[in-house]
Amino acid sequence: MLRDITLGQYMPGNSLIHRLDPRTKILLTVLYIVMVFCVSSPVWYVIPLAYILLCAKLSGLRVRQLLSSVKPLRFLLILTFALNLFFSSGETTLIQWGFFRISKEGLMTAVHFSMRLIFLVTGTAVLTLTTSPIALCDGIESLLKPLSKIGFPSHELAMMMTIALRFIPTLTEEADKIQKAQMARGADFESGNLIKRAKAMIPLLVPLFVSAFRRAGELAMAMESRCYHGGEGRTRLRVLKFQKIDLWAALVSVAALFLTILCGKWIKL
Image (cartoon, rainbow, N blue to C red; front, side):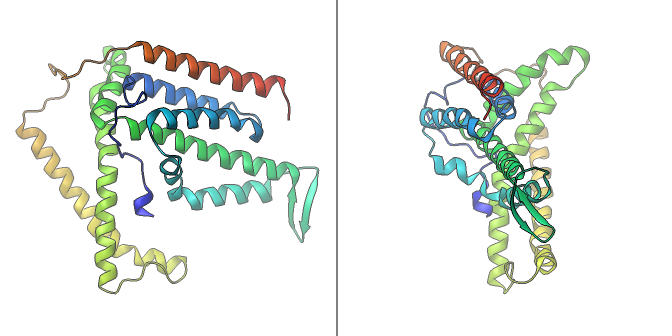
C-alpha cells in the first residue's frame, strides 16, 4: 500500500503536458475539478474520462500509474459507496433484506460519488506526476503574487506546500523501510482485528515521526546555512512564460467544461 502512494511523485519527461507552464497546469487542474463537480449523471463521466485519457496520452503516463493513485483510498471508496448505497432514499426498490434496502436512486448515487472521488484523485495525480516540485512552487507563488500586496505570504505558502509534496514520497519510502525492518523482527501488521492492527502500527509510526522531525530540522539548518530569507530578491533559473500550447490546452479544457455543463443541463439521463 505504501508503494501505491503517487502524490508528490514526479515523473521526468519532455511530453506536451510536461512542457506546459506550471501556472497553466494548476489552473487547468482547478478547471478539471469544477468539470467533475458539474457532472450530473454517472453516464456523463465519459467526458472527464476522455479528458483524463487524453492528458495521460499526451503526458506519456500509463493508465495504471493513474489508477495506482486511487489504491490508498480503497477503504474510503468502499465506505463512500456503502453509505450512499444503503442510506440514500429512493422510490424504486431493487433489493429489500430486513431493514437493509437498496434503491435504484441509491445505487446511482453511490456510483456517482465513488466515480467523482476516483476522477478527482486521478486528475490531481496528473499535475504532480508531470510537474517538478520547483516548477510547482514557482507556479503557485506566481498565481498568489497579487495577494502579496495585502500582506499575504505567497512565497512562504508556496514553499511550504511544495516541501510537503516533496517529502511525501520520502516519508513513504522511509515508512516502507521501517515496516520491513519491524516485520523482520517478528512484527505482524496484517492479522488480527482493527484494534490489534492499530496497535501494531505504533512501532511504525513512532520512528517515522522521529525521522520526519529530524529531516525537518536538517532542512531548516540547510536553508539557514545558505542564507535563505524568503522570496525577497530571489531570482529564477527559468522564467515562467505562457506559450501557444498553454492557450490550446486552455481552450480544450474550457470546451470540455462547457460540454459537461450543457450535457448535464439539456440531456437528462
